[in-house]
Image 1 (cartoon, helix red, strand yellow):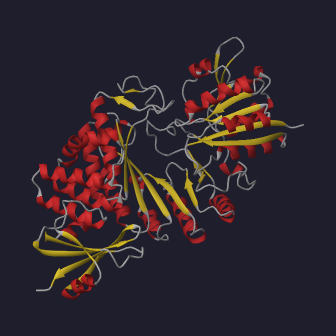
Image 2 (tube, rainbow, N blue to C red):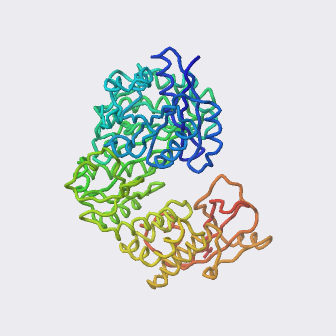
Image 3 (cartoon, rainbow, N blue to C red):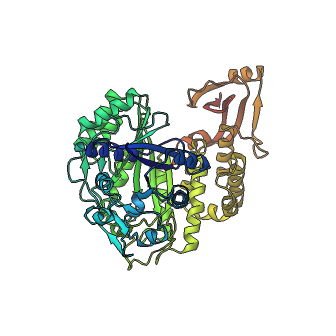
Length: 570
């Protein structure tokens, strides 16, 4: 009778699964002739785990394994402690990026876990051959454990030393869940960059699946109905030729699959940008790891780049309408000051990507930055390992960064409010400082207040600055998203014949529209004494005074995205 292996997958949400289960299983079956029976037990971090334990007991595994990340490690510790009581005869082991550092304290406080794995899946079949023979574990690369004498043993990191194409495909075996919103796909391992905060910084070069292998795997995913794939490669755009080939393959053969890719924008080439700009609209979602524009901080994390080229490449990406551009900024980097972070956000707002994500640096186990006692960085020793303060930025300043992150997410990352937020920043270089300080209590209490509360907060800010132009822009945006308040004294809803009467008196120019069908009513007519519509589309445009009127249409679902500019006929 085959021995039973239970793989526990604790995901951050229901929308995805882990590729690790399939990778471990398919390699084990190739190396050990399918002598184990596998069971996949999957939950999200927000689940009640009682059903998980019931299924595990019914399966009666000899071996229980899982993969730990910073978002699930604490949950997994609790789960494995309970398993040791419910299934005491089972051998428990765990791997993942959480174990790239020193694992002695983890093993000491979790004596129910026999071993932890560092590195890739290559050592796992060797462990299965000897899981009942701890004396043989000394020869297994990549595992850490407490030996029979109570001593900590560390066997380094397991690294598959052949081409990735030599690893069997878990997709060819069907070892993946087909009912998820998206799937994670790995076409390369390692990273050419050596950023000191990244778990890939210690990788021995980069290994790739061939384009032919990638095509074969994506063919299988496509045939099973998968319509979104998130490519796990650290730097998809390197090397250039491979990136171009994959982009052309995805856009020509798999145009109905949406691909999420991560790039290093400082290393983008014209050929890669040209290939991306030739893809079907909406097929790609690009995540660009900016981190910071500060040269001294970039150099301190081994990312010494040409910031002028970085900015130029980001502008090229942001100008395209074919794909959404998501950008990342990290706070708490070495040599980085609070003002640098504000400057980073201001520069990105000017570039105008679709999304800006601002996060505090996490000091991950085993990374060079975690192993450098001289950098003076202090961080929380518990997940998610966020930096608390550095020699250059205080705890209070990083607390302000977290509030700023919520503000950006509540304004800039909302399409209907993005241009208003851009206008406010370009109008006043101190806007981010002052608005954050004025609205701090609002965003300490909640992540995303209602649209009305958010707009009222901006109204109060504009009043405190005695800025009628910003007030007018807020009023225009309020009309655009259909969020009316007492501040909108220059707007009124039109019904029935009123709409026709208004249209007869003006010429119209469409400023903005969407594919959402608009209702014939209600329609809003708003009057302004300056060119709010033009400034909404381009915050750098000149302010022009005059009589400007705008007609806004709404769908029954709210903002249609269609507004019509109507100027008075002289």
